[in-house]
Length: 113
Length: 113
Image 1 (cartoon, each protein chain N blue to C red):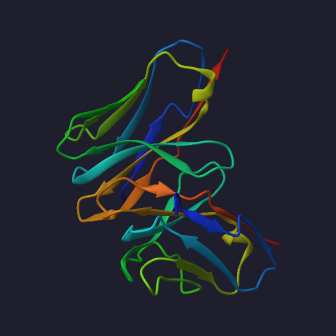
Image 2: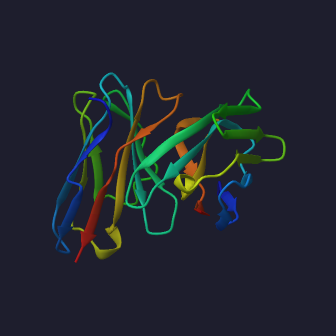
C-alpha cells in the first residue's frame, strides 16, 4: 500500500523561526509531489509543485525539496509568521496514475507571536 | 469561474437517504477530482475525471458511491443509502491538464445522522 508519512504531527514555534516539515513516501515512481496548506474549515491551497525531474521549488519564504531515491521531501519555511499557522499536507502522484494524489496526514503548525 | 465551487457547503441528511454533491471546476480545466477527508486525516482519493470519462475510480469505497461529469465541466457525486460512516468533508479539485497543480474547492461537509 502506498503511504505518506509526515513528521512532526504538530509543531509550535515562536514567530521569526526558520522551520522544516518532513514528508516521506513509499512509492519511488512518483510523477510529482505537492505541498498544500489547509486552514481550519477550508479547502486546500497549493503551495509548491515539484515534478519528478526537479529537485526543488521556491516561492517567497517557502522552499520545497524532493529526493526520490530516499523517498523524502522537505518544506522549509523561513522567518515564520503567525499567519503561517495552518495544517501543511504533502501529497504525491504515482508514476502510473498521475491524476491520483496520495496524501499524508499533515503537520499542524502554530506560530505564536 | 475564478475558483472551484462546491455546493452545498454543508449537508445534513438522515441515514438511508440519497444525496448529491456538486462541483463546478475552473472553466477550461479538463481534469476533475473528488476526495474525502475525515477529521484529522489527509484527503483520500475517490475518483478522477479527464473530460467526461472517469479515468480512475479506484477510490470509490463501494457501489453506493457514483460520480458523473456528463459535459466535461460540472460534476456530481452521488451517494445512495447514506450511512453514518459517510460523514466527512468531500473535496473537489480541478487542474488544467491533469499533470499540473490542483485547485481545490472549499468542500461540502456531509453529516449523516
